[in-house]
Image 1 (cartoon, rainbow, N blue to C red):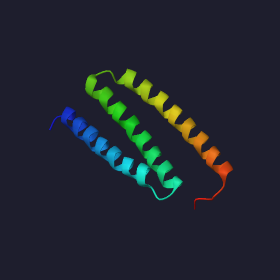
Image 2 (cartoon, one colour):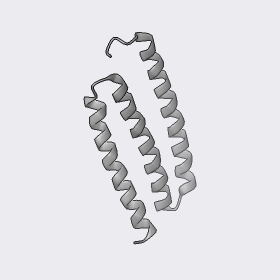
Image 3 (cartoon, rainbow, N blue to C red):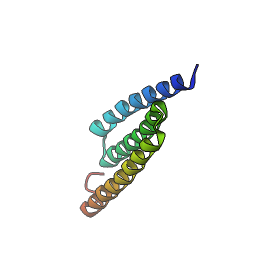
Image 4 (cartoon, one colour):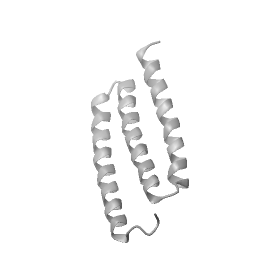
Length: 92
């Protein structure tokens, strides 16, 4: 098994995990479960970007994109959490 086959298998596994997390995002019993699912999807997307960078031989470009995506995802989740904090615990 070459290293490329390993990376392809990892990318396929992460894409399957993202699909499973989409179920959690759309059918989560609470808002916090949905936010957790979004966090996992964001982390998996970063991992997929880095793995695709290694597969294409342009890891430096893909790592830059992944870092930018991570920063934007973190800021977005903080904004959503602050918004939900202001609404209170009415859905728990």
